[in-house]
Length: 489
Image (cartoon, rainbow, N blue to C red; front, top):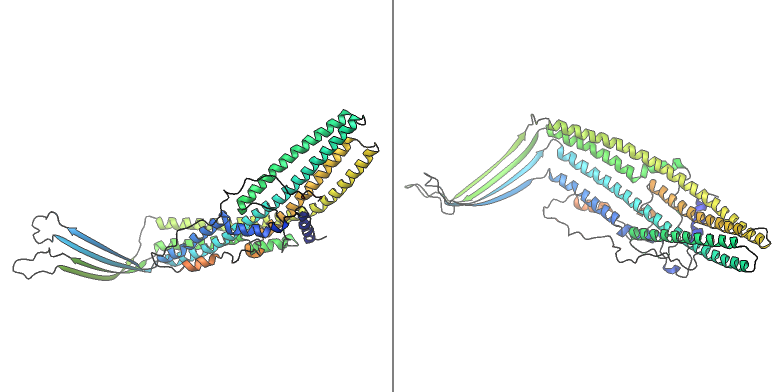
């Protein structure tokens, strides 16, 4: 049997634990992922962070654009200085200045390039966040399915042990069994009730974790669909991961951006050239006196000047050298971090593949164990009826059968989660890989294209509003399971 066939059987068999009369309103895995994609606060927050990263491009571009400023000033002379008979009593002045960067040693150009590359790195990190949230949602979804089945199995076990205790007590009353047999049945029933309470607590925890991730109550979850695109060898998985893993793509872009940062730092020792123009207008408001016998002086003074400034840095106390060395050290760090991420991606991919394969094989083994445990339980009960087996033998056989069923349910959950984790490590567990029914997917390039060329100082966005949904109104979860859930795995 191939791995994909086992996954199909895993999904189908898990689905047997979910059939009930309300299946028309059941939640699907795609639906849960779609809700998390639209409303999970970690993901919506990461998108907002990416929009903030986009703004670094126009910020860097602004360093190379003209800077225009005006000032206005009104003066009232309160006390005239001695011998200043002609000083005006008041004046109104206005100045306009424009500075135009012409050459900044390459700092602006390389700063813009670094910002653009960091936008690409941020988009890759956003993909990684998306895959991480999806992996958590899949795990939470499968945990609810698993823990619901385990609760149902434990409920059935408590019910069966209760019937067994009653039968044992009845046989004790007629002298067919001893008090020891009754005590053993009572002990096993008490332990089963404790196991049920633990299973119920685990189910409540899984449901609450699901709500925290998805933002909605896990209502009658349907079996998940087969996972697409699972590799047939770890080498294939690693090759795909090295090409498509978002964390590795982000690390590569971060290393590239650090190279531009070094060039920006080196620009501090290069000459800079800028042009400027300034105009001023002063009106003395009729308070400028003229010398006796001279024609009236003008109450208006105008001035305009234009030129260029060339700055040749000679010595800056060693600051530029330190900044370049600092940038080079950070570039070296980014190179090492890329290798670190690559190592982790390779290890994560291989580990996920091994876990997936082990879980698939575990399903087959546990299925055989369940069948064997059921057959053994039937045989022990039959042998007990003829006196060749004790009550303790029946109790042990029932416990072994329960353990086998629980392990099978857990193996199915582990196989699906491990398979999805493998897809995430390969970079193939994102929204456009999963056919989510959310309408148009979020495209970070839309905001980048919107803001990258903006130049107007008063071009603000509307006040931000929350995108994620709150869960304060969701009811506290319980451990109730549908009546028809406790079926044989």
